[in-house]
Image (cartoon, rainbow, N blue to C red; front, side):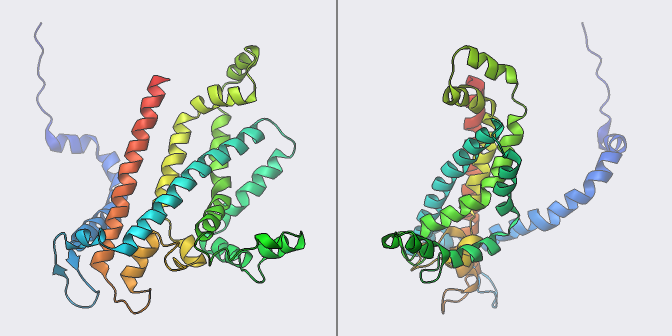
Length: 308
């Protein structure tokens, strides 16, 4: 049997056939090109240059990237970013899931709890950072005052001024801020899980923990992967909350890639001059880390889904 080859309609014919889609997509494509693709290309070029924002940029090749690995402050910021990302990914993925399971079980006041949990989400990160900076204030802050009032004055801390407590304190605020957002995602996804699966598990005498592990978690795997990816990206690029609360202090103990990028960009940490080329290389590192980790997590999630 021979196949009849139709003549190639050619590009002009394809354009005529798809002109409505091209017309509707063109504005979005132009916006993406102007505000994302071109600035990203310029940033990549700038990361290979030395530029203080005033004089003409000087091409330095890979010198900015080589300097990063010998920069003690960059390595501290990289370690703090990894610490922040790992802890928040674990806690901000599991805690909202457990709370969503409780709400989905039909406890009393579920609507009220969903509202209360979601309220911090509508507060901007800068405002919540300022609010918690006042709560953590060592002399007059609510937290230390509360501990003293219940006879636990020995537990009072310099929450944001002590190297040992500054990162856990910031991470606690991040969890408080984001719990409602991920809770809503989990709760909405749980509404699509067929009730017959839970009924079958109950017939098999599965307890609540076993139903969570063998029914809820597998059915929510794509959503869990999404939450992990979002938490990873947010952790790697975290900036505003830390900058408002500590500006990377004390003594760089809470510096992350985002805050170190800002301080090197605009010379915000004392007398250092702006180093826009060097700062852009940090931004490229953040972009590459976010991209690689997101791809790895998505691929691992797909593989586990197929095996299940």
